Length: 451
Image 1 (tube, rainbow, N blue to C red):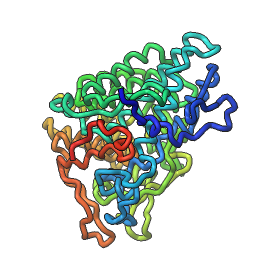
Image 2: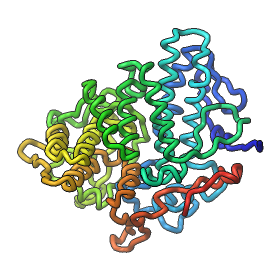
Image 3: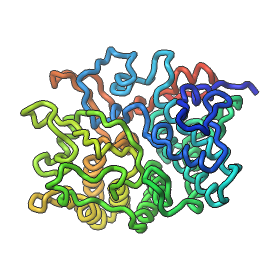
Image 4: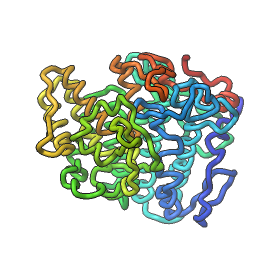
């Protein structure tokens, strides 16, 4: 069998945790750990494991507006994402997003390969760390799928491709084949289900995986797969655990900010991203009642004085955006699944009484209304757009909604407010980025995405 060099792109650029004396590299780029403390430190590493990533997940969605980018800037990763070009990188640099997530998977594979042979620690602790790493790898793989695989359609998932499923830190092994998307998602759901018995109910902090996180991850994954009964089942499993809640923003109306991300009961699984400014798109702003919605008060400010339409995320340092999984997301998943099953009244009760009522002053609150299944789905999806704005889930949502013919054309507008620079049409192949050129060069037989 011809040996591929795919793994060079998984490990190239892995930053070593030089401040941790237990780490070594053999071969270069592969973290070596030997004790339970070592593996625990890998799982706790906020930079190389517990962060979301290095490339802004909001750049590609319809939530953001960037007036500094040009369609001619093809050497820019941000520009290629923003204008949905087939290749995120067109130069010889390390492949953006692909490398970022596979680097995290590589570090997690250090745990799954070695923790059961750790020099000390109980069998229970070893299994717990193994299970945590398996669930977090699913989180990474789902985001890789959102960029480099077509959206999951039950009718076509058996004939399109996922991404390579990597389980080893051995750079000499052949590149794993791209499985079908259907088989890949079965693998991911199976990984989580197998991990659940060994997970703890609580964790030292909300960057670590618990049974609640696993159930939440299953709910997100099944929603992506359009398996609404199972997505609802695991959303309910999260809610029944009662170790999270939706904050009533009215209780913070006289305060400057909400609770810290790392201690907020809304945050189930925290994955930090840099606290950067990002301007809301006109389309996103139009989804809000900007005069009454407390989300506008807490999360935005005007980027142009006197222009109420020029809003950016306000960048509260103590509320660094969580790009992981939130309790409100799970509530909205439950509401959507109920709506899709035709339980209109139940869906509207959940979205209104369990979430929306806490986002407005009592005198300005207006419940969403629906009398048909389609109206309920539309109402819940609109609330989902508002609640999860700029929190890392929109691209996954856009792709799944496009498959269902629920996504309108998305336009990139120039600074004059008129000129259309690019359009992402419904059903466009540009909802899927191509396998990076650098990876293709070392894996010439790897099947590519249709363009």
